View 1 (cartoon, helix red, strand yellow):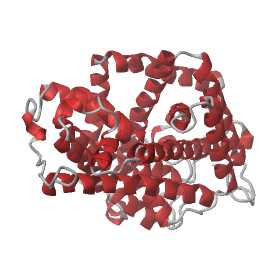
View 2 (cartoon, rainbow, N blue to C red):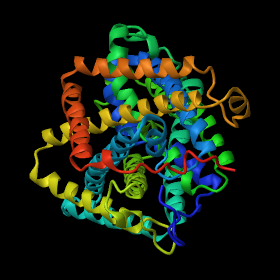
View 3 (cartoon, rainbow, N blue to C red):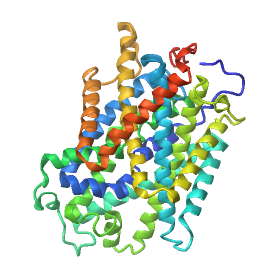
View 4 (cartoon, rainbow, N blue to C red):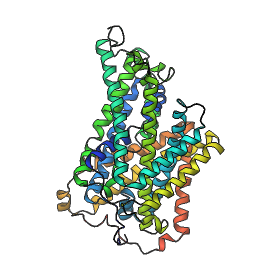
Length: 466
C-alpha cells in the first residue's frame, strides 16, 4: 500500500456503541418488514428453520472475517485481505464487485424512500424524495465518520425498538390474549394450516436465497475496521452477538407473526407489523411502521455510501481507481470517493424513470450474486490466512474461528448450494447469467488496463498490527 502522507489517513472516529448498533442495523433491512412475506409464502412456518440455519452460517462467515480483521484492521477490509492472500486479481474483483453491489442496493433503497414518502405526500413526485435522500446521506458521509456513525446509531435504534415492541406485544397476545378480548391466541397457527412444513422441505430450500439476501450487509462491520476505535474489542463484541441478534430479531419476530396469523394470510392484508399494532388499539400503526421502514431504507443507503467510498479509497491506493479517491478531507473522510459513489447513485435516480421495473429486478439480482461472492471470498481468505501461520501464531490468535476448519468448509458448501438453488426459480435464475458475466467483465478490465503488470505493493493488512 502507498505510504500515507500526513492528512491522508482515515480517522478512527467510530465508537463501540456505533459498531454494535451498526452491525444490528445492517442485519435488519427493509427485508424483514416487507420482504419476509414472500419467504413465508414459499416455506410456511418452516421458514424459521431457514432463518436459524442461515443465521448460523452468517455467524461462521463473520467469525472468519473477524479472525483476520481483528489482527489487521484496515480500510477496504476483505478486499485488502483477498489481495494479500488470494492474489491481486481477487482483490480487484472483490473491491469493485462490492462497490457495485452496494450502489445497486442503494438505488433500490433510494427508490423505496420515494414510495414511502408518497404515503404522507401523495402529490409530490417520487424522484424529489429520492434526490433529497441522496443529498442528505451524502452530506452526512462527507462531514466526519462520527456523523455517519451517529446517524446510523439512531436509525438502527428505531428499527430495534419497533421489532422488540412487536415481539413483546405479540407475546402478550399469544400468552395473555392482549387485544384479543383476553383470549390467548397460543401458537397452534404454526402447525394448524398444513403442518409446520406445508410446502415440504422443498419450500424451505427454495426460500433460502431470499433468506440469505436478507442478511446482506452484515459484513459491513468488517469495512469499518479501519475507522473504529479499539478494533479488537469493538469488532469482537459486534461479531460475537450476530447469531443471537439474528435469532431474536428475525426468528423471534417471524415466530410471533406466524403464531398470531395463519401463514397463508400474511402479506395479503398489509404488513403484519401494522396488523399487530392495530390489534391492540394503536390506530396510527400504519404511519408509525411507514416511518420505521423509511428509516430502514435511509439507513441502508447511508451504509451503502459509507462502504462504497471505503472500497474506492482502498482501490485507489493500489492505482486501480482514480488517484483522487485515495485522498481524505481534513476531517479524515475519503471525500472524493463519497461524491463519486453519490454520483453513481444519481444515475440510479434517473434509471428509475427511464428503465422499466423488470430490468431493475435483474440489476438487483447481480447484487445478490455479488453478496455470495463476497462471503465466499471472506471464507477462502481466512482459510489461506491460516495456512500462512505457524502453530505458535495460531495459538497466539486473539480471535479464533470456532470449529476450524470444518465451519469454514460447511459455510462454503452452503453458499455453493444456495447458488445452485437459484437456478430453480425464474426470478433468481437471471442472476446466474448476469453475475458471472459481470465477473468476466471485471477480469477483462483488469487485464485490459494492464493492472496485472503493475508492481504489487503489499498492503498494510499483511503487516502485523501491534
